[in-house]
Length: 354
Ligand SMILES: *Cc1c(COP(=O)(O)O)cnc(C)c1O
Image 1 (cartoon, rainbow, N blue to C red):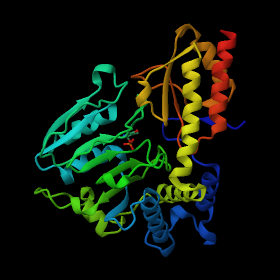
Image 2: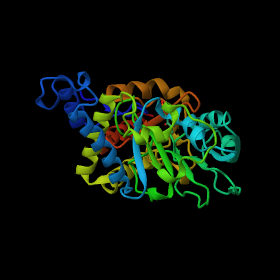
Image 3: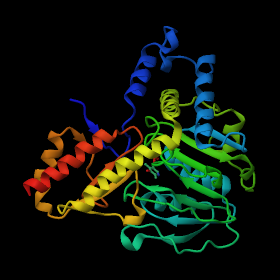
Image 4: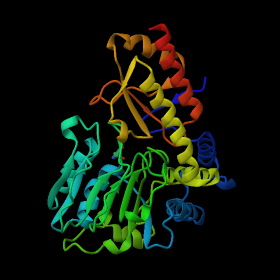
């Protein structure tokens, strides 16, 4: 039976992408060789890398605007330190909206002063702070657009003179934004784009080269840009699969098309959470993420019953993160509206039994 995969990451990918990726592992482009056994310097793979990089910029509307796209390794977690290594000279601002922001702050502190411009820690990160001021003279302001664990999402981005750095790991390519307001965007592939192993970094080139410290090659964005994202052996399978997902998204109609579907999915699950007395939502309503819906049972004693029903319906991956408990339905781009319908049916079935 086909499973409905609500996993928070690594996440569900389009079936056609999985099929094409598996074919390429056996025989890449009819070459008689596997994608993962050919040289990354071969013409065929260089084309894949270039296509992945240009599709990323195209879908974000950032072509010919001074941006470069890179596919790096080390996950979004390496970007926590790499952004600071390359951009933090004296002082940077961070909006602390959850576990991932907190980790980014910890890494940046190795490189300079970190000002926490706002934090929702007092509410166990169930909301996004809004009435904060951004101090003058920051090297950059760091934001996490979607808080995967707590299920909140920034809807309105601050206007500031400071360069904006944004961790978009769990909502990149999911909604329309003016992406040119950001100077650096990073995202681990495994939330909304591909398998683990590649991290997309989109950088406005003119923000680089301003710190006085020396940067080791592997952590230097300028080195990766100068080598067309091939300074060392790239994660070929992750890049290829990401490229296939970006192609899939483009054929679907791009971000505006997927945004419409994502909003329908989110609306369906949140209206069930709000109308069904067996459940309560975790995140503040106005800050609710369209990607990760967090909710709890009102009566914890029903946990075993609900979990069994969920399992029988072929639903995978809705257990909440240990810091929130309860449930989390992650509805990334490739999750169908139909899968969300199955979850909502199980939730209303619990109410009928209740
Ligand atoms: C998952 C996640 C990360 C960590 O990504 P890795 O690739 O595992 O290092 C960072 N930020 C956000 C918002 C995430 O969801």
